[in-house]
Image (cartoon, rainbow, N blue to C red):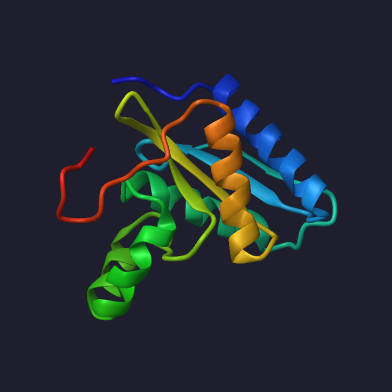
Length: 148
């Protein structure tokens, strides 16, 4: 199974923080491996105190659920009890919002990227732009479909 290296994680973090600077946002960015274990987290100067924890939860959710966190929203809304229980079983909260994207290459889940500090749309944009630029896949099938 391919693994996400610390060097790759740092490249992702740096690119994402640079996007935050261009947006004029103080971001926190986290990268986890496929099992949701933290590889690296950075908090830019001026980022709010809770943003690193939020970024970690977004990255964790994207990795272990094998889908970007914005794809979890409908599920969380349609079955809130189950979703709440799922979050209690996990190491970190499972979040259903923008700003957490699964890191995937050649069809393999490598981990998750989480961003916090901008608006939800800005967090999502920063994730998608840096992962696309670095050559990671951004296409995920809906739940209940082919896992491609």
